[in-house]
Image 1 (cartoon, each protein chain N blue to C red):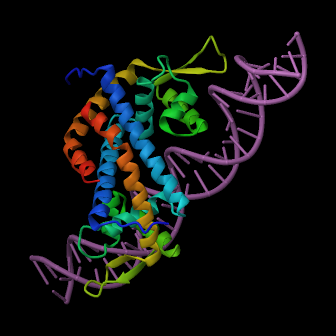
Image 2 (cartoon, rainbow over the protein chains, first blue to last red):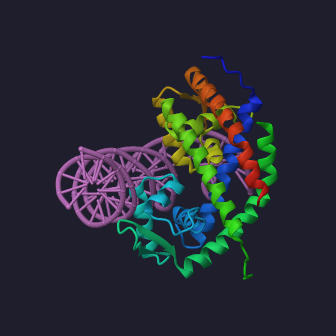
Length: 135
Length: 135
DNA sequence: TGAATATATATCGTATAACGACATATATCA
DNA sequence: TGATATATGTCGTTATACGATATATATTCA
């Protein structure tokens, strides 16, 4: 085991990076709450919107994007569905599979949230670049 | 309310950025678990180590760095203390205040964890820079 | 083709960590 | 000195992710 040598500056950079990530997460959670969404619901809507498969994602694909277990994704989609933000559509080609589709309301909410997040990320970008530069 | 105009690429970049953050968080949590720490315990050790106050932080300062409530920080420090990773030291100048100090074992664990995190961050830096560039 | 296996989704009970509300001790201020 | 502010601590609740398990459908291959 090599004796890792780390400077105070290394620790400071790591801590500052984590703080920046926590602040972004806190911003995001506050925006989501203000829009009437649980934080995870916002993340799910974004993952569904930007699903990289060319078709509406199923439960398993949502779970993969969010790095959660499929059963957690089931509960998440249940709550989104109750909130009128998504609907489950049957896949005619594979009747095990559910396609999860955004409702018009979800599109509207997600558009506003995403615009706010783009603004925030642009605002914190200089700090993130500086921290990444210090690594 | 302005009609925000967002391209598919905007959504894709936002989603990819969030996925990168989740992957980093997952990496970090796995490393912490492998070192025998709960994820938040690792974050707390780093925050204590890099406390920007020039003296060992108190409960409130830890809470501020971690963006959690002070009572949550109390529980976190309780568990760290039980695990032999920190000790509470009295502050002679202000007897309300606790100074939370890392043990030698915490220093060792944190050094290895921090080295691993620096490596990981350097590895994902190109991707993060590319995503930030797309904003 | 049909049995075995794999995949996709769903259900249920549990556990953990964060929170709000409240409490206590000490410090500071008017 | 009394009133208020600050720092930490306690307690009970809640939300969410998880493991284990179940069911339906699809795929594989003997």
